[in-house]
Image (tube, rainbow, N blue to C red; front, side, top):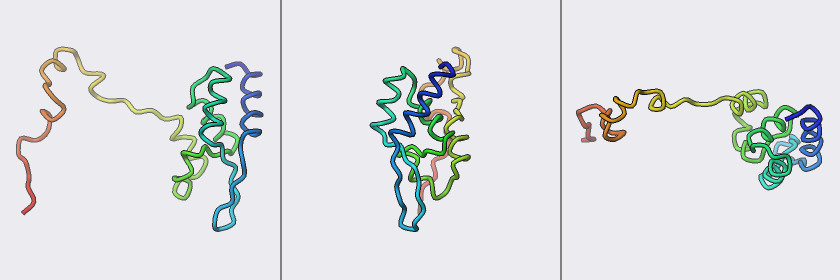
Length: 114
């Protein structure tokens, strides 16, 4: 995305976001899911890119609202930018063929509650 596209996305995020007031009186600018999806479609980018741009401006995507009591905006932004690597992706094909199911790597004993 170009610099002009990024600035345009930033202004559109601010235009589509609303200010919500919590029970404690704290006001938070929030971007709803349908607005974020429309911005992603209009700018031909991923929804995650819109969330990243919103968090960078201090606008909280609606789906991140439930974690706002625990994580700060900076924490939410670092979580948005992070990714996970699943170990099975990096294994060789020969080893993957031996692996019959995800449960085959489980311990041989099954513990039962008494």
